[in-house]
Length: 194
Image (cartoon, rainbow, N blue to C red; front, side):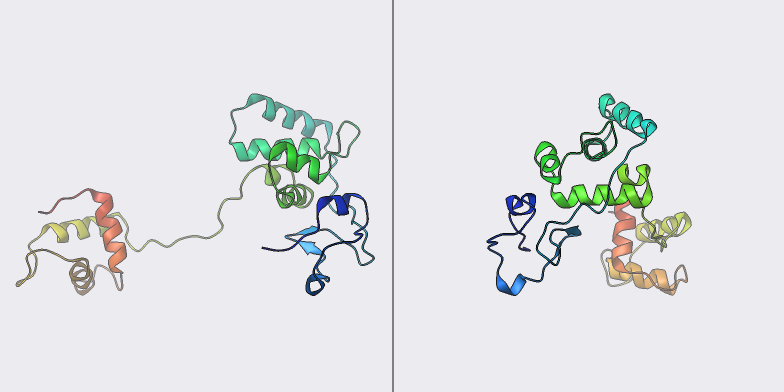
């Protein structure tokens, strides 16, 4: 676990008599939250939130509905309470952390994503960018099930996953496939060959 100074040191604006170990004296960042400047003063918040009246109204509507996922609601509350605009209460990290039972890092991440990417990015999860190539399509799964329901090779009472894999590749249905893919596909089908 990373060491960080107690919050009362930070909120006073200066790290005085800090119990920071000497080997960690150069730490200025804690999981993305800038805590201390070179001179030992607490840093100003890098990401200043100033919601437009439309954004504020939208967030208030979201928080009053109560039908959204808890993560989205917490993020909306964080944005509303850290708003530095004329209508915003401009709470500190510590006040938000205590009120919504989140870490300072969460508050920093929400603020950062709002400033850099906008309101939608701050509220909702990003869809995964990675695409997974499927080894078996519907036709391949059908052939696998048909093979698993057929008679096992001579000398075996039933098909093993590795026997199915070897036969499946030998018949030319796939170039390579793992026995784990075979297991997952057969588990999905609810087939009972014996």
